[in-house]
Length: 541
Ligand code: ATP
Ligand code: MG
Image (cartoon, rainbow, N blue to C red; front, side, top):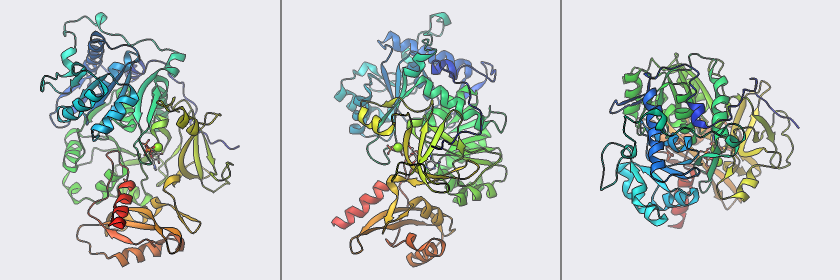
């Protein structure tokens, strides 16, 4: 059996309360350091205020009946104080479940029920949805709190339950001691996977999972110093990528984090320019925008030093175009999933391998397994990534069957992602097992065709799905294409272009469709199910 390991030594794992770890302050930041800035209102929170207010909210929760193990649901788009609400239940040995802010009432009901939430913190814009869902699951109105400073329809800001500012520190809630084994068994977060391949699953992550992954990522970051930077939090904070990179790791390093409530190109570019942002965790659609959108040229992005892309494939042509356009930017990809807290692989900024998700993170063991035979993939061949390590989730909430199907008896988590590895240990994602198109027994990866398509300057964006070809009893690739501004490229020209770049079996035999926009989730994933639904709907009519 071949096990791939990190080029880095294993790091010491901090088995403690995640709040204690996150505030351990290895960079000796003073309490006066600005920790959080709201990009739009410019409001700020210092490091000292963050620690104090997190403990004040925790105290308020306890005063309102919150007990160890209870669950707080956070249902909001990004807020600069989101991390205060997240870390208060965590420090109490409770659980936080972060909810996709685009959820409808039935989706929210499902997550509230599945996670067992008994408190909700939401945003005034989402209050009506929260109230309706809370009613259905029996969460009383007095346990629904708001972000912001204003009461709305009798619902009060979460800060309304803080004890007075004059309360001595010794009377504020303390982080419960979870040192050692309890950190490995106590759930801190139930985050929900993106629902790309089916219904979103409740992923239980322990204190040890969260602390470990922050510690595991640090060595891959540290080929560039300092770790303390101005960081932009534009990823959704409800998603594990945002929870870990924009909150846990950023607070641990005491980086100044500029928080954008929602992504839009103008606010994003403006925030980078205004706050001289140095470090950003992004997703491929945002990289695509930085490379292709004309509006980018109107802003000064010279402060940016590091960009990490994750959550979906970033084609090599795209990252090469990024660093050619912005030579001062160091770029790398990271790879992971909610079930891995989330990172198992990351590249190194100073020795980038474009198209690669990087090397194995410390303390992780990785196998590449041929899904057909269950044996190690032969050298140079692709296989499913299996991961074992301290960042592997405790399990799926209320779903021991799905947990057993995902984590095997040896502790390896089967990711469902197909990859290859080169002889220097750089991994390359081919695609998800579930997305691979089977053309007459040949495998075609949509991600590869999408990379070819977006490399064409006449094409603004693209997505590929497999559609049935009944006559030939096979699946064939169909491309959805957004023309670049001013382009008049035709379907035939797109087909011919792809045919000139790929092997015969990968040609766009399912055709080419022009669309205005490719549907994507806030976490950066192409919503192929929406494209499939479009095709199915057309067939039906
Ligand atoms: P669900 O499991 O609910 O269907 P999901 O897998 O999209 O949804 P997440 O946990 O948010 O939910 O995403 C993890 C997945 O994202 C990985 O399994 C992988 O397919 C993809 N991914 C993450 N990083 C990368 C990357 N750098 N390159 C390619 N794919 C990536
Ligand atoms: Mg998944």
